Length: 201
Image 1 (cartoon, helix red, strand yellow):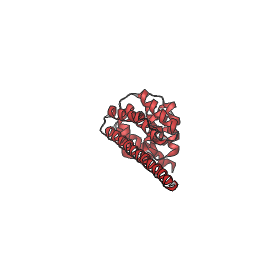
Image 2: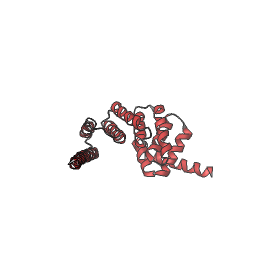
Image 3: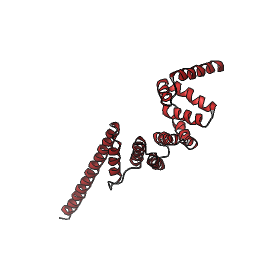
Image 4: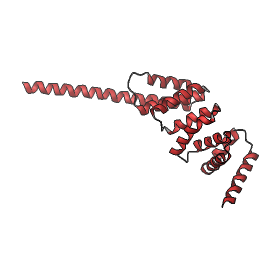
């Protein structure tokens, strides 16, 4: 009789544990679905709707992993950046970096906000940290060129521009055009960099 009671208790505990784990599993799937839904909204440029989904995730009442929180904060920052709300973009990027100080994409993103605000000196430490993590990521390298050019550090600006051309010439030309630099000027820049390289050999 005692063994039957013990077995019933064990069975009940196992059943409760199973239900709890199924609940957590279901919640985990729901979170992933919501995160993916917000990503799709971003791809469709529906930033306000994506913000609403991310905020609902943060208010869900369940404890999110630090990794998930930092990604949500970074994506909120991105949505606000796209909506030209630089203050909120900066605030959410900062929150993401408080959780994960080596979050590579967020380091570049927060620097983009500071560059838009012409806070070049403030952008530099974020970009340097990102560059230390990946020296071949074109957006970081080009942003370092922009910052150094605006800080009048000609040698460093030239170094990063040359590196940007080496990594991805098409992207670099496109970004230069976006900064109102004509194709003729771009041609001159490329020739100057090439001639300097030949002289250094």
